Image (cartoon, rainbow, N blue to C red; front, side, top):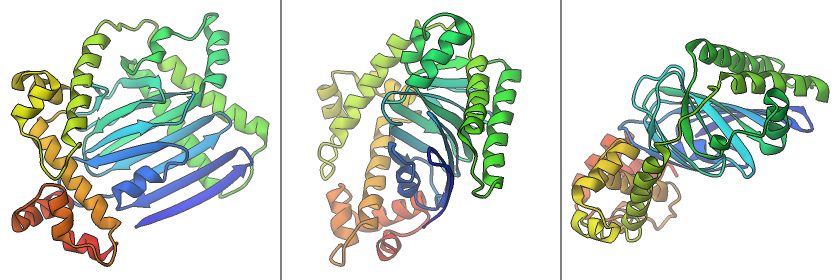
Length: 323
């Protein structure tokens, strides 16, 4: 169940906070974005996301209690900047590991992020129409080419702390206004201060030599996932999967661990369990757990029920009844 609080700050600005125990509600609540979340770690889920939309730029802070794989798009014609300054586990952005001083940068059209349990992410999504001229005014040259990639860059610890402090203070200040409107000039000043802090945290030079290797591994994983989900009722064997992908078992396993932090066998099982949960939540009066489980390749109902409860903190019958 989601608890939403929305506030209008001006015709072109708004703030929204979502608290929910439903992973799909968390993904679907993020206005104008197309996101798909898979729960990776076991246990009942809870999460919160807060968005502050300013002219041409959105601030976001998202906290989840379980490990999650996020994929999708953050709109068209935008750039994203994000960090996890209090990282407590392994996080992977497009096949690249993060630490607490890392900034994720890239075009908004392709998000692929694995976050650990008990994690918080802060970030901005800014329109290219706003970013391009600001960058040229700041540096007297066009936007850096590496910003077109999905890349992890390293910032100085002091810069990370400055961004985090201003980002959180801006969100808190906007929430405290409780619907009191801001004029356009004030909104733009607020936006520019945050955006400049994020830009100045970026390093002066970025090494992109590893991106081709990372992209090649991710293509292997993406192709394998596509094949895995092509017929969920009959899970593909690893031998068949390797043959279809054109990779050895060792290479496939290495690519999955590098890009998603887990093995292909485990990830396939998690995708199928998440698929069952999603279907049960949208079931009808005639839906049965057995029918849904079998459609996702789970034929031993008692074993499936135990695995499901371990993963999501409740039996599948409870999920179906609470739809």
